Structures are given as structure tokens and as C-alpha cells.
Image 1 (tube, protein in one colour):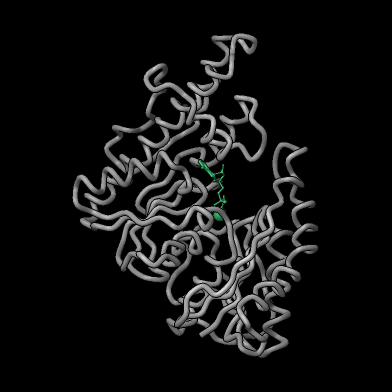
Image 2 (image 1 turned 135 degrees about the vertical axis):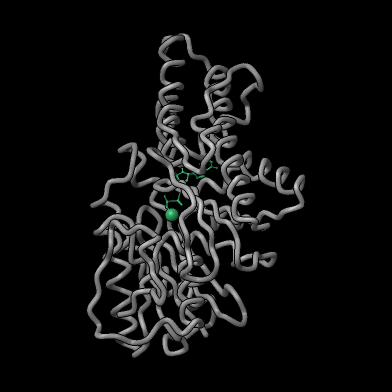
Amino acid sequence: MRVLGIETSCDETGAAVYDTEAGLLAHALHSQVALHAPFGGVVPELASRDHVRHLVPLVREVLDASGTKMHDLDAIAYTEGPGLGGALLVGASLANALAFAIGKPAIGIHHLEGHLLSPLLEERRPAFPFVALLVSGGHSQLFEVRGVGEYRLLGDTLDDAAGEAFDKTAKLLGLDYPGGPALARLAERGRKGVLTFPRPMLDSGDLAMSFSGLKTAVLTEIRRRGAAGLGEQDKADIGLAFQDAVVDVLATKAMRAMRETGLRQLVVAGGVAANRALRARLQNETARDGSEVFFPDPKFCTDNGAMIALAGALRLEGGRASAGAGAFEVRPRWPLVEMTRPSGRVT
Ligand code: KG4
Ligand code: ZN
């Protein structure tokens, strides 16, 4: 089965073609970073308009690159939510229009389900069941994943998501949007042991997380020194100490989730899964206790069409997709645990 995937939930326009026999055949991405950079963050209206400009050319590009004609497609998967309403509508509209034109199903995919299943794009891939650490700009959650559509929430952040904490802390340090990757780069020049920030909720005895206090600790440190007293090396030291604290909390909670569930495979997905320090730490921890960790390729950690095409194909394969009435909606707010089986909205 061959599925076109479309992602337009935020500031990346993504398209991809996934085949259940041959795997990922083509993917293309247009980043809106340059568009939003002057504003220091994503401007929703500009995001929607930019998706309108780039989505059709990207779809053409992946169809051509994979040698796929519209009528070869078995379904069109798109991100139904969560995300920016207007941005989601661009992808949902095109997906439903194309599906209507070829008489095939349009499958609404939960963005986080896409992230969560994205390690299955890799050759070395986990088998169900596994624990998933989902760390993106909007979420820091641990799930027990028993199969496609079977997601039990084990732990959540009480306030900021890990990616959000990276972005806000980057801003405090004067780094440009998008702050997370810039902060991670800065941290590579930081000196170990110069500074230590608190590890919020590290010893809370459960799987809950919290990152807003850490951001405040960074702010206090910056204020203590005074903006003028903050050189490049100081910023790098602060960046490293911040990253160490986030990585420590995420890794400790993920390994605790493995122990509590008795599962031996850990999947890490979402934008923060691209973080090299987090990847290295979890490689070490799992190697030490004989369990396994799986990451998507760094280019598939942040938003992309490949994960949506894959999730659509898995839902189609599982028989949980059929042609519907042609009406559709998007869900800007949509907790993943609301996805009860059988699911994958099909319109
Ligand atoms: O998954 P994603 O592309 O979008 C959402 O679904 O939110 O994740 C974006 C988030 C941003 O907060 C970004 O700063 C963070 O992932 N991020 C990183 C890195 N690359 C992206 N955070 C830390 N280190 C990185 N290398
Ligand atoms: Zn995402």
C-alpha cells in the first residue's frame, strides 16, 4: 500500500510517500524558519499562507521523485491536530481534495502519533511494545506503546515542555529563534562543572516532569551576573548546565518508566530527540542495563511528512481506514490519549 503524507501543523511544510513494502520512497520539507525569524517566533497567519504557497509543489515533488501517479496512491494521510488551526486546515484541505479526486481515503493523523511511530522509519526499528519518550516543542510525555493506537500515558510535564524550555532559555541567552538547536550548539562550547542547575522533580518518585523552575534558575543566574557581565563563554557554560539538567531529568524518568513497565525498548521522538547530549546519555544508560534505545534519524525528529505518511500507512494496514463522507475538521487541541481504538479519523 502506498500513502502520501502531508504535515502542516506548525512551521514546516512536509510531504512524503511511504510504501508498506518498499518503505519511505520520497520526502520533502520546506522550513519557515527564515520567515518567522524576524518576529522571534511563529506567526500563525504567516505560517498558514506559507503552507499554501509550498504544499502543492512539495506534493508534486515527492510524487515525481517516487515515480507515483495520483491513482497509485491507496490513501492520503495528513496531520489533523494538534497544531495551529489555520496551518492544519491547509494540509487537511489539500489532502481531502486529493482523496476526493481519486476516490481514496483521507486519513487524519495525530501529530504526536506521527512522532511516536517515526523510529519505525529506520532500518533498525523497535517492535511493539515499547516505552516512548516524546519530547517536542509542546510535549514532554512518556507513553507505554502496545501497538498502533494503543498509547497509555505514563508521565507528563506539569508545566513547560522540554523543547519549550530550550526555546525560552535560548531567548534569555539572546539566541535567535528557533532557540533549541542554537542552545544545543552553544552548549557544546560550555565547560563541564562550572555551573549546576537544579533537577526539577528528579526524585519525585514518579514519572512527572517540570521544567519551568529550571528556566527561572537560568534567569536568576543571568540577573545575578548582570547582562553586561555575560560573555560568550559564560553563555555557553549556562547553556551546558541547562542542557545537562534537562537531559538528566528526561533520561532518569525514561529509565524509570522502563523499570516500572518492565519493557526493554525505549523510543525517543520529537524535536528534542535530535539533541546529541540526550541521545548519548540514553545510549549509555540502555547499554549499561542491557535494554535498547531507538531514535529517528535526526532529520525525522523535528516535524516532517514522512512520519505522517508512515502513520497513515500503518493505520491503513491495520484496517482502520475507510472512505467517508468527505467532510473534515482539524483539532488544534487534541490529547493523544483521546485516540481510542479503532481510530485515525477518516473522512
Ligand atoms: O517536534 P518539533 O519539530 O515540533 C513540535 O511538534 O513541537 O519540535 C520542535 C522543538 C523545539 O522546541 C526545538 O527547540 C526543539 O524541538 N529542538 C531541540 C533540538 N532540535 C529541536 N531541542 C534541543 N536540542 C536540539 N538539538
Ligand atoms: Zn512535532
